[in-house]
Every structure is written in C-alpha cells, then in structure tokens.
Image 1: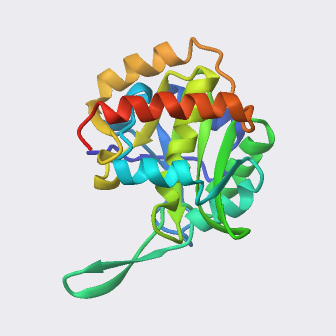
Image 2: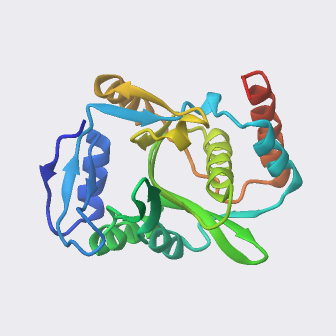
Length: 235
C-alpha cells in the first residue's frame, strides 16, 4: 500500500513543501519515536469537494448549530489533540491506537501554520474544544493530516466546515492520504497514485486562499448548496 522512504530527522518548511508537492508525506512509527519516514501510497484517499456526502442526521446537526466552529484559532491545541493515542475496541478488548505524529512533525506543522501553509478547524461545545482537524495548504490542494473527536459527530462537523471553506476558497483537491470507513461515509473515495499525481499537478496551478472566517452569509450559502447536493444522494 505504501512505500516508506527514510527521511531527514529535522523537517523544514522548504522540505515539507517540496515533499507534499511531489505527493509524499512524513510519518513516524509512534508518538515517542523520533524517526521520520516519507510515505508514497500506491492508492490515495480523496474527498471530491463537490461530492461531500452529508447524511440527513448530519444535515440536521449542522442546521441546529449544536457546535461552534472556528478555524486557525488554536492550531497547536488541535495538532496536540490529534497526536494523543486513542483507545480502540477490538475482539480482544480495548487496545491503544498508536499515532504517527511525533514531536518533530508537530514542531514542523506549527511552523507551517505560522507561515500560512497549515490550517486547523476547531469544533467547540460549551466553550470546550471537542473536535477538530488540521492539514497542509499548497496552492489549490489541501492535504488533510489528522482529526480528533471527543464527542459524537464533532470530527464530521469539522470536516463539513473544512469542505465549505475549501469550496469558498477555490480549492480543487482535498487529499485524505488514506481512506477509512469514516471518510467513505462522507464521500471519500480511493484513487490510484497516478490519478492522484495528475489531480495534484492541476491543483498546484491554482492560487486558492483558505478563508478561516468567511462572512456568515457566504458560509451559509455554501452550506445550502452542500445540503442540496447531499439530499440528491442516497442518505
């Protein structure tokens, strides 16, 4: 599925920009592993921005404004939350899902955020951070890196708000790296590495801007379009 390539121990914005523009991304073996390697998947996950699927229940949640959503207000908190190992349930009982985000990746992504090349979406409930995601921004491509959720539906709300902002900002590609069941339910698909490279080249020709705080009427209109598109799909 992936082709690990040894990487530098110190990541710089220059290295990251070249890597993501070439279609590879860094990972670590674990939260406390200092090593870095590059991954070049043969199959890539993406979410076509015009085909995000929002179920009837998710559309109701978004309409009711059960959560408050911001962007780029606490990038460091979001990436640290994403780096927390999460318990998962399997047939043998609980086990810990190890994260691929180590201190070097955290440090480098925070630097990218300071340069406007990485963004976060934050989901709040009663002034508590309950979900979010972060990713890398290169021209018209957004590489979704990781998300977290501390309450039901928080990460789905974050993804819906991310897609709305990407559509408003003129983005062409939302890269999810790999595909998961969670992403499939929201319209994620798997494509070949060659197809991904062709889409990436096209996206890198577009000068898209990430609207962290779009006007409420603009954001609302985009959600109306997204709801209409989703209602025409199977919920």
